[in-house]
Amino acid sequence: MHKVIKLDNIRITYAGKAFGNMDYNYGSKKEVEKNHKKLIEIIESKYVADIRSKSGNTFVDLDTEKLEKHINFFACDGLITCNADIAFTLFPADCIPLVVYSLETNLKALLHVGRRGAEAGLIENAIGYISTTKHEKIENLRFYFGPSISKDSYYFEKVDSNQLQSAEWKQYIENKNGHYYIDLIGFTGHRLEQMGVKPKHIKYSEINVAHSESNYFSHVQSTRNGEPEGRNLFAVESIN
Image (cartoon, rainbow, N blue to C red; front, side, top):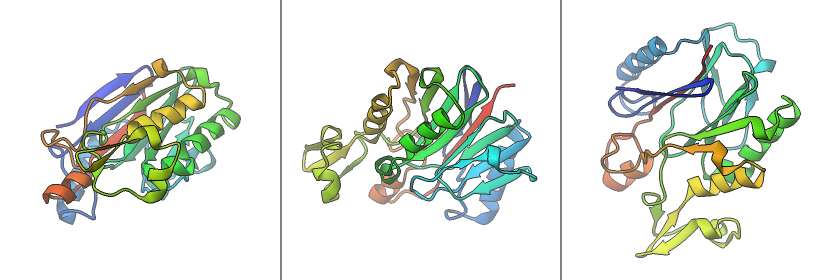
């Protein structure tokens, strides 16, 4: 029903349709509440901080916030903390759940990366903040791209003219068979490498959520094929 992977000092939990839709905007309230209860049973951390994405480039440093509830909601596109007692949750569809963590400290971050956020500098702003405010060396950071939409499924007949004419996007948009194929994962990975991140310090999930047999919710797939809309589960915790 859900899968767990461990990366050094980080535990990542993710799930798709088998676990159930996680967003109240889709499906019945009763069903979503039941799925949220299942999630809370899985989370081992004292606090849970949930990202309610704004599809932009804002992030919150939870070390400047006082968490008094078990579950806390933040309207932003990323969360950062050095507190090992805080878990992050995010309910994505096609966008990239990008995990950042340190090998030397309890620093971890979760970013919701879509096209607009990537272009607006979400990654650069967050990593820059981690480097300057949290005093983390970029060579000690590791990165994990969670399940998201891959280039072979992320295609359209038309693309925004600004994106199409962008020199930065040029190598990540391919025109074939009358469609434009967009490589958001490649674009995002390239931005990390431009900041000095070594490719060997980046791991990528092999799951394409928009693949017809992936059993994950995908907005693109839903729009294209009329499948029921929903949102997946993605959670990040420190291993104590």
